[in-house]
Amino acid sequence: MNENNQFRDVFDAIADPTRRRLIRLLSEAEELPLHELTAQFQMGRTAVSKHLTILKEAGLVLDRKVGRETRFRLNASPLREVQDWVAFYSKFWSENMLRLQQLLEEEEE
Image 1 (tube, helix red, strand yellow):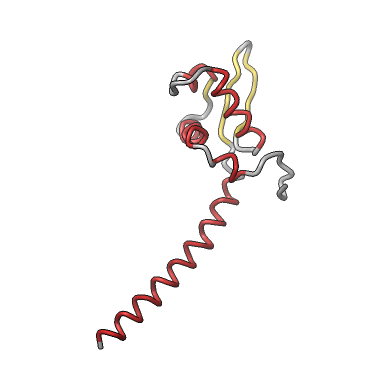
Image 2 (cartoon, one colour):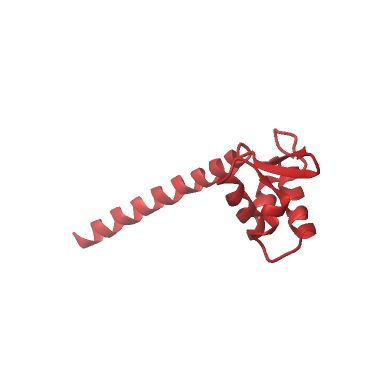
């Protein structure tokens, strides 16, 4: 799929608002257990687990067992692909806005 040989596309993984919120929660903590993540949503543990599985398949989330508890943490490195994509289009729009500004200034003269 991509150079990291991941199972799921990172863009697909972040397309859902629930998964983006999970990423945000994990970015604000070193590690969180499933029950703490589930408490942040109005959905059951199974639904949150499914979202976490999708994030894991994209390489965005890592997990580990601590006794009977599963703890999750963010692996933000796959987000570099998203950042690079957005940066390209940011440059595109900046250049176009500069051209538009120049045209408007020429018309005013």
